[in-house]
Image (cartoon, rainbow, N blue to C red):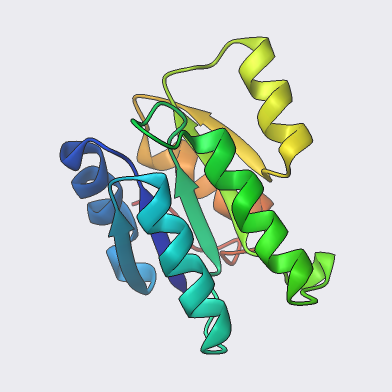
Length: 137
């Protein structure tokens, strides 16, 4: 699995990376602009990200903007709905307004911080990124 972690706080990236590193190749970005560039490059190279974990509150370009850009890139390059990257919003903003906006913009799931490994792995299973026998243990 190819994974992109996007968060402006390095500690959050390191935590998620510790959870996900055994599942595949993990790249990271600390801002939306860099994340969009990495996302586009991977798609152009024919090696798209299977999973993007995306924070909402980031300086310059927030997670909502970043999510929209990623979905537009997929649309422009002809990526079908069944081939899109799975994008999980991972954020401290767990209010209904932000959750609904993220879902409307095309995220596949939403996890409130602090992220627990078990919850993350349950989401990955729901998104068919993990086999049922793969657990957070």
